[in-house]
Length: 66
Image 1 (cartoon, rainbow, N blue to C red):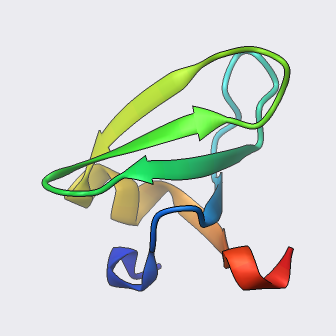
Image 2: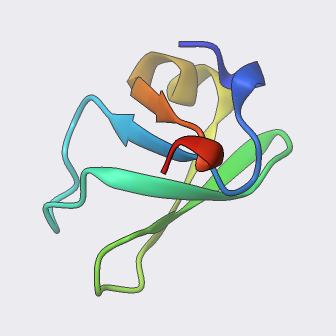
Image 3: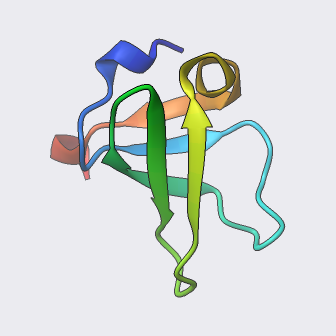
């Protein structure tokens, strides 16, 4: 997947599931590292650099399509 298509507020699904069973993450910060927030009841955050994120993204869900 191409990380250049991401905008703040978009959701992504990653190839590997987080131990908290979170599948969908909301993008809250861009730059060299991208910061994501869990959309579950937990207040979890993850940071991924561009190369790792490009390998891990399975699906991009645009904020307009929710």
